[in-house]
Image (cartoon, rainbow, N blue to C red; front, top):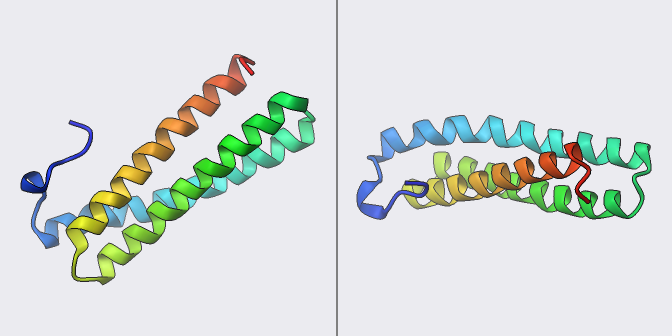
Length: 109
C-alpha cells in the first residue's frame, strides 16, 4: 500500500523515525532537481528543455514541501498527520523525478 491509513499509522515515537529519513533525503533531492535544471539550461534543449525545466521546478517544490512537513512533524504535536503528508509529497516528487528521468533519457519530449 502506497499511503497508510490513519489506523495503520505508528506511534508518535516510531513515526518520527520516518521523518528523520525523509528530511535529509528530500533536501538532497531539491539539490538534484536544481542541478538537472541547470544542466538542461546549459545544454539548450529548446522547447523540450523548457517543459522539463517546469516539471523539475514543480518537483523541487514537492520535495521542499516534503522537507518542511517532515521538519514540522519532528517539532510539533500532530506529528503523525504531518509525517503522512510529508511522505505523500515525497512519493509524488519521486514519481515525477523518475518520469523526468525517463523523458530526458529517451528524449521523449
